[in-house]
Image (cartoon, rainbow, N blue to C red; front, side):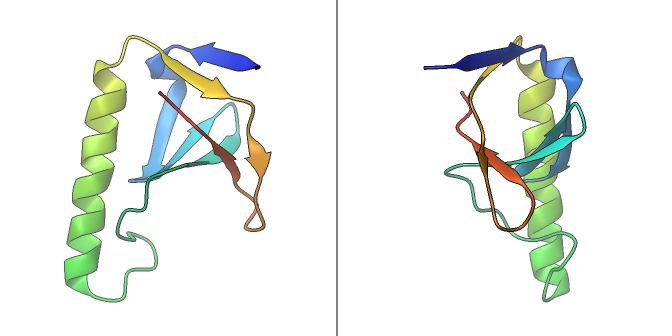
Amino acid sequence: MFLMIFLAAAISVVDGDTVRLDGVTYRLLGFDTPETFYAQCSYERRLGSAATKRLEELIRNATRSSWRRPTAAANGCASAPVW
């Protein structure tokens, strides 16, 4: 099993279930949060913003994160389990 370990400061949050690391966008497996960019209503956008802020908080307070080798996705994002 291949693991990558990164300092939390190197990870930027795109939205509640997507992060960016070294120019690569990753969808977090097991997460499905409301949309922020393509929300269908203002309520969904508010929920998506709350999810984004929560993920930013979790990453900011993390001392490190571990990722398995990402897999390619049809939408151009990689998917990777994170813990």
